Length: 406
Image (cartoon, rainbow, N blue to C red; front, side):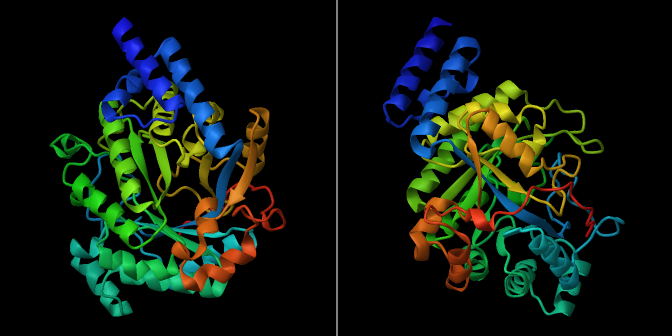
């Protein structure tokens, strides 16, 4: 125990002094408990204050689940449906625009497109449907819908389309303010039979890493992150965060790192799997802050509705997207908190809540490098000198989400 504590103290001293931590130096932090954990949280909070101040951000969005068909079969997922399932659905253009317009009326700025990975490669009937609509691939359809949302509502798209080639990223870039893909884990062990990513070709870490790297080459501001509690070890969480750090060092494009807690969903193979504890979330958030001291660290508040206030004391500086219109289609059992509630929690803990776009303020301020030409005027009309949404343009407090079950 003494040796572990000494290693933790040395790692914390390095981080506090602004020196980068190696993965080996971060490994003991990933298992910190008791006084060691409290010391870790203290340094993580100090680094967040040093680099981000006491402003915590969120994005006001609509969630557009364009298609819930997918060629993967993750053991924890309820979003994905198979053809023939009564809940399988691909949204029509009219449905997409109805949701976007509802968001526009509620002061949203972001249109979050989420979808399954390349379902046309697995399902011939869906591939024929795309062709009948005039599209060769799902991502062609995504690009067209992003364009229509921009033109007809002014919302700024952020797309999470899964694994992409560099050409596919280039296709989406002109009509997306930002994009993302969760790394989830860098461990190939999770691909084995009985593990959560077995039979999931798009969850092969190497392929997701290639997508993230390609986004950097295309100058796309990018979101990624890890999913904790799905069978990975604490050390594997550190490994994934170090991969993300390395990718950002190469491309400078990872604007946001999400630490997401696994939620067990009845009816899935992992329906009885234990969920990560609050202590695990705090520890992982703090380690992420130490490994990425200047980064934007986010965790979803709706996945810890009674505990998320504690995240503020582990180095977090963002809550992600919050919607006044749509549910969280990936975690439909977990309603968004109201913005007024988030603001009150932040204030009680000594922080100020501010709205941002789907592009973080530091990327907004860099302008042309990250903002596609067609979106620059819209962004400029919405933000202040800091790159945050102008207070006069911030939406009113959210009501309970409407049930737009597209």
